[in-house]
Figure 1 (cartoon, rainbow, N blue to C red):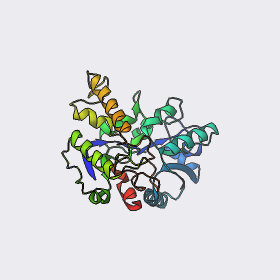
Figure 2: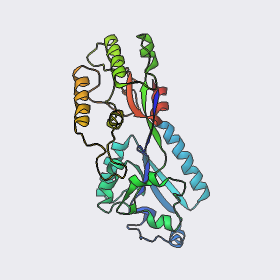
Figure 3: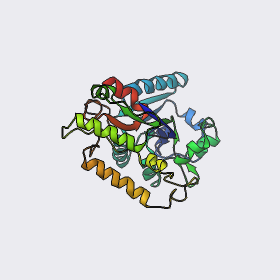
Figure 4: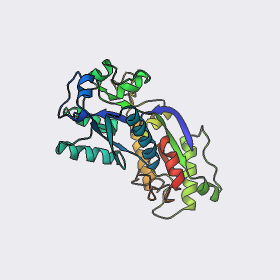
Length: 288
């Protein structure tokens, strides 16, 4: 495993839907008194993750219910973020959306723009939700038009995971922490030479575009997020050209399943490397 130093928010945000507290709508100024007077409250909580996360999440639910005996939480675990988005859309159409959802910034605003997500500002103002321990910069991705719709429950690194047994068998040294793109390509070619099978590629997915840009002294967006972080479009064109080159040479898989099961390319030994978020290391390692 080789970790990078850039912190990124991944697939770990909580949002509240307009079905919160079992009501058909939620006031923009929620009342704790109204919550207490309604008797036992059942909250449906949809989240995604592996068995390890399932166990950890259930422990948190049990702790919360022990401290709040008037609240029952119905857990709705699903496989991954794609399943969250699909299930969320279906349940919205049936007006049965979960009250609390662990979602992805990639699609949260598809729902909030249609008034299907409750802004959290009033809950924070009344100290029902406490985000004081979260850095303001980490709240920015979940904010739109001055409304906070989601906040992170964790942060993790983008990491380069590799199968050490495959490299050792081929007498190939893994890249050091300061490897260059050219050195990494040499390693990929060496691994591919040991595994010429057509369904094998040493790299399960293309390296993250943000890291490629950084290697070229650029970044995707400006510091304030208002413009692109580079002026020369050739940088991004070169990234796509490299992606095509590696695809044509069989150095990267054309399509990768990110679901952590026996079909994952690292687990199934269809690849030796994958660019992935670090919170998946334990799950992949156990299966592999």
